Amino acid sequence: MSYLITLFEQHSYLILFIGIFLELMALPISGELLMSYAGYFVYQGKMNYFLALLMVFLSGGLGITVTYWIGKAGGYKLIEKYGKYIHLGPERFKKTAAWFERSGSKLLVFAYFIPGIRHFTGYISGISKMPFRKFIIPAYIGAFLWGVCFITLGKVLGPQWKSFHQAAGKYLIVFLIGLAVLLVGYFAFRFYKVQIKEFFIHLLKRLLERLKTIRAAEIFLIILTLVLIGMVSLMLGLAQDYLYNEFTQFNEIAEYMVHSVVYMSWMKGFLVFQPLYALSSIIALTIIRIWIKGRNRVLEYLLLFVPILGVRLFHESVIQIFHSLQRFGFLGKFHSANFPDLNGMIMITIYGTCLFLLVRHSKRNYITITIPIIGLFQLIGLAIANIALTNVLPSDIAGGYVYGSVWIFFNFLLFEMLRLVLEKY
Image 1: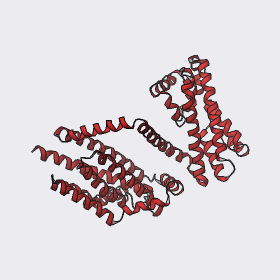
Image 2 (image 1 turned 90 degrees about the vertical axis):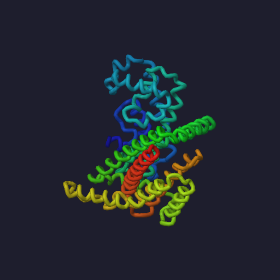
Image 3 (image 1 turned 45 degrees about the vertical axis):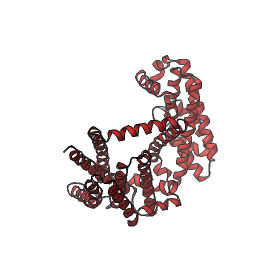
Image 4 (image 1 turned 135 degrees about the horizontal axis):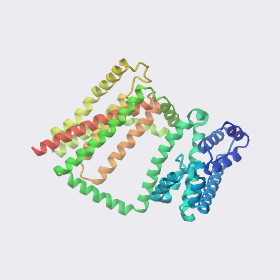
């Protein structure tokens, strides 16, 4: 690989083209490394961004097309005779082919991002006799997106490329999966807006009707329990990373990406939701809403104030547990004394509890959907603004949000169980 990097510095476009082509022929070459290195060259002004993208698109398209026709011409006998040389034996072929059959041609778009799959995509598509017209469009779209992502990644990381490219690539794949889900949702809504709207309105009406019954309340408790279990699992995972000081790379990448890519000056406006007057306003609005609703006021006010007043005590308990664990064997110095971030815990506790109570008492379907989404974007915006403008570590904010979520969902479950008991007796 070092020899290829040396050649790359002398013949950038040619090596990029040949390297991507050979990787898709199933040779052991790292296409992500070449593309992100090309992005680094773009940052240095040694390569043109659009020409680099064109090289990846052409070589990726050519490579996957050649392997498609090889697979179609050779058929399954190709796997039996030569599959072992490219780590694609009959058993692995059957598993991957079954995955392709279940997912259809749309998997071709994302197969480039899956190590161990992209090398065989063309062969499997050809051997499976997938129609070429069905194969070509998603395969070429995937090649283009693959190039855009990793060349842009190298360009964005710039001087930090050598330190971050491997880890950032992992986070980028997670981001791409999330982006793909959002894009699919957007286009589905764009083309099936009426049907989706009618479906969700009907679903929400049925859910709201069923929530009025005891059985529905029990289902609601099960959902809260599952969410709480998921958040506790995430909390324990973060605790393990904290105790073993494994947040360093995450913090470096997150801070660099926020300062270089994500943060924009207008995001400073999110900090308006952080002062005491903003928190007092949402609490006051919730108090008024509960009073107007007039049902189970005492229970609702307890659900509002117990999490808010108890969050500092919960935070202090977590800190004490970490210090105790340090005394009993975790002797290294923790990377931060502020994990989990108290401010993050307070933000998610107050906004999460208030929004939960506002939605819980709303009969309007659009409020049930829009308020949680707005709250989520608000908390994300607050996290980005704090990382960009203050000294708080990304891992501390993430910890604050996760530990705060555990705290409020524990209270939601506790008080909803109490509500169920009161309604029965």
